[in-house]
Amino acid sequence: MQEVIIATKNEGKAKEFIRMFKPLGYEVKTLLDFPEIQDVEETGKTFEENAKLKAETIANVLGRMVIADDSGLVINSLDGRPGVFSARYAGIEKSDQANMDKVLSELEQIADNKRQARFYCVLAVAAPGKETFTVSGTCEGVILREKRGSYGFGYDPIFFVVEMDRAMAELKPEEKAQISHRSQALRKLESQLPSLLSGENE
Ligand SMILES: O=c1[nH]c(=O)c2ncn([C@@H]3O[C@H](COP(=O)(O)OP(=O)(O)OP(=O)(O)O)[C@@H](O)[C@H]3O)c2[nH]1
Ligand SMILES: [Mg+2]
Figure 1 (tube, rainbow, N blue to C red):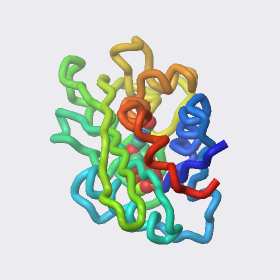
Figure 2 (figure 1 turned 120 degrees about the vertical axis):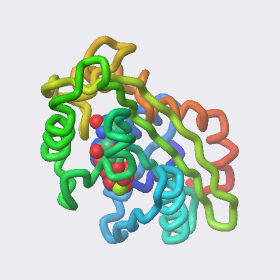
Figure 3 (figure 1 turned 180 degrees about the vertical axis):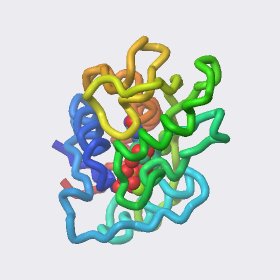
């Protein structure tokens, strides 16, 4: 099987990419398979900037094409927060539980009809000597008042997916893979994968 490198250290994302790429005929490797590679500092102001930064840095380290994912939760009544700070919203230790608790408490006084939010995902494709490009995907939802479900990662238990009428963490992995921001973005890349990977080893 041809190999695709996803420049992420996030286990939840890694599992989703492995699942999404398998039916396309690709085997996914992530930075969890390259523990010696250091974290890339996410200094960008936008998802696009951070996705490019991660993809370009790792493409140069490995000398081959990589895809990076920068994603997060955007909440209308919080002026777009947590946004690019989603992973570390409640602190650098990146605790999903602490992040969700912070959002729930910030939205405590916010009425049910003002709790709209969306997940946003940018995938950046970078290769040494080539122009980096990005695709993006979104998933619309509403922030719940308590956690529901146990699938997924991050903010999934407090994100109600309008389209599915369930919390994201109540969706089985194969259901999330149908509708997620990450799968919407990947769909825009799918047809280009063979030509992007031609010339790559293995
Ligand atoms: O409930 C969720 N379902 C999702 O599907 C999802 N996708 C992203 N997120 C949140 O946004 C952060 C990304 O930040 P991020 O792109 O910087 O990734 P990260 O730092 O976790 O790993 P890396 O890919 O940078 O190595 C994550 O940690 C999560 O908090 C999600 N939450
Ligand atoms: Mg990150």
